Length: 176
Length: 176
Image 1 (tube, chains in turn blue, purple):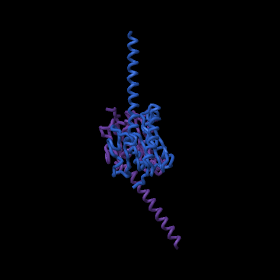
Image 2: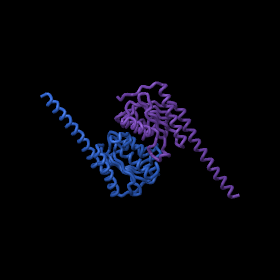
Image 3: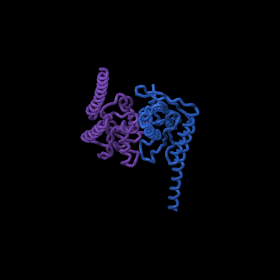
Image 4: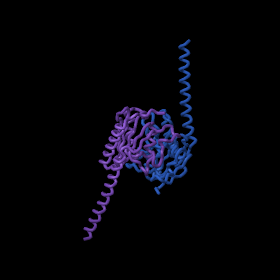
């Protein structure tokens, strides 16, 4: 069994706060607000925020960016004895990357009913056919993560509605 | 339904040949021989070969490298109307990335009984709960892919055995 970091409730809340700050950074550049942090020996070794639209890169999810940075920081693809914090349940790609990286411990905030691979659609972290399992805690500061996502998508809908109304007004003015 | 490229049997064999050449490139630098190619409009737009040990990067699998290159080449994270060829069945991470990239068509060679997410352990490309499905063909030039992998792992075992024998011989010489 892989060594699993031992974190206090205060540490967990604090590191998820950093992941939430990373999610806000994503939102500031127009990205779906999702953030991630990787911790080793009680220290942050890597962060990531969703940059898919900005980078136009399929793999620019918060978790994968954080994993890449942690690989660089530690000089190895094996992220043993680390913990990953992410504001939203990982998708198949990111959950697979977490398993491939041998990360032993994951804390996440909100569930993703449409694409989540950890508890919603799949439970890949518990799959004992794979060569690595991941201890997982769900629901850490989940309300804050959900609120960020809700506000973001409401903002998008409001923007689209305003654009539609402006277009209609312009058309009406033309016809007058 | 996403548009799926129409390829002839000759094209399929040819592009898998390029993926096999990519797998050989991996082997030449001491990596597990796995290669991938992405094709659009009958042209290769990206290739990738496994570089996990060389890069010490969790995500340096052949498929993910090819997807990153294709993102750059096309300037978008959406790889619509492309086909991906890979010598070995994708793992969860790579299968998830293929879904996230909206790749509509995948050809792969050998099955991966230990980690394959397309037919062996999971069948994620057929999952209609996800927002994208992938048309898949398995077994294209599979014997060549299997042989490459078999030779690679036999080579590693032979090397380890030779090292062990050399160590033993050195110890015996010391004790004489």
